[in-house]
Image (cartoon, rainbow, N blue to C red; front, side, top):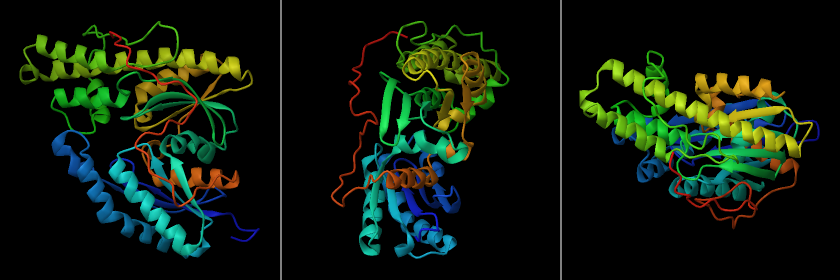
Length: 359
């Protein structure tokens, strides 16, 4: 790229069950994007099967990259860099994306950038809303549930994380218990619209406790017991299913809001001038959660920023943008980078052992 042309970065995302490639410019333009969902392949199993996911990435990634580059109408040597999710994620899929990115970078003679998947989510609001540092991110998805202070590119502080399961896991497992489709979050939200959120006295995990950590394992157990108390899933009628969905959703919303309130307090103490709460990840699409977080943020003098739903779920645009941010900061990687199934965004944060908390 010349000095008068914004850098173009190819982003590759293969950390879970989406195969994606995108070309994004430093001027915040999506030049091309391709995304292939694997929902149909995994739906019969009620969850992600790592071997199936890795095989799908192998089968489709090269084609999606070629299509994205053709739509962007550039050659590989014209790229400023190639960025790929280097972790965390299902290691088979991560390896597929990283190896493809390394091969392109080596042949084209451009830098390779390994992007932490969480960093992709964390920096998306800078792409969509030109958000300045610092800000607080609530990352809620099937695999992650964290509160992160975003202080700069490569400078992240973890305020809270789940001690067991992520919030999306609770949605998915409850949906499976109710015989609903996968992924469970949208199915539970749809069903909850007709339900009574007060019918079942489900716990609000960690609510009222100090700190910002989350826990959802006990909530799943409570839902299982509630279903068993009604004679099992096969005995549930439409009303019971809707009420369970609504009760679960409300318990999750209250729990997440409580932990996020603590996170805002801790973050504001460290950054008195900060004023933005960003919600990202697949569960960020839940309208009930967004509404509660907007009310919470406004009451604390913060504004809630929620990127478009398509950029909250896994995508290559966020990986390409994170690559642009890292490239501008001089943060590139060697071709000896090793894909990582686990990769905490805040390397200095202490590990959170399972505390055996009863929800």
